[in-house]
Image (cartoon, rainbow, N blue to C red; front, side, top):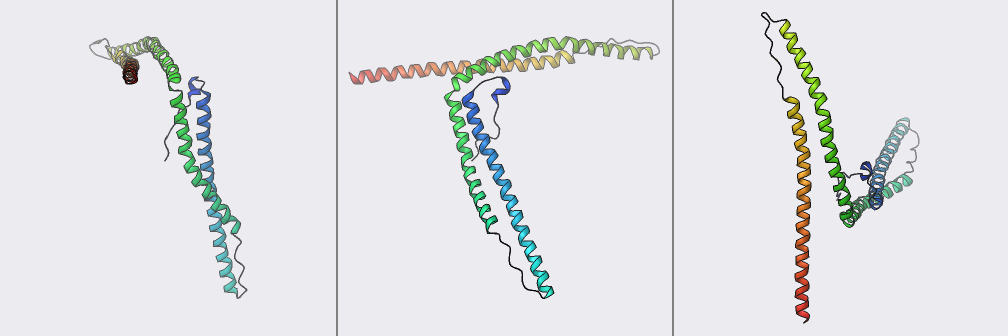
Length: 220
């Protein structure tokens, strides 16, 4: 059974993980070969069906004309290739989860190393997002405020008697606040992950210490 429906490509974010790249390429290679085998099976089935249909038409024409029955088409080679492609397809169906399992093993083997890289990049990305939000909010708010002021001014000119209502709008600050809150959420979850992992490591160390102590007492 297929283990992954989608997979990341760390190279897109600048990570250099040769072991991951090699395992991912094996997964993609199996997927490509499986799709090729499936297409070939469909093409062979269509060719065999077409040959059989043409044979029936030739035989019908010969019977109607009182001529000698034509020899049936030679389909042994196509049938043999179809069997081989079906066999290959079955093998590739089994190979795909195996290749994905190897990818999972590689990820587990390098988890701590890659986790540190990704968490470091995530911290920088959160900081960059906040800087971008701060930089973007002022020109957006200024442009929106000017448009709203001119909108109110256009209405004032057309009002009799003229009644001017200065625009008041919090849409931009609220929208950017929501975006900022999402960055806060990402940072908070990262901190919670770190704390949970730290506690798990401490618990493992305490358990290992107890096991060593029990082993030493047993040996004594």
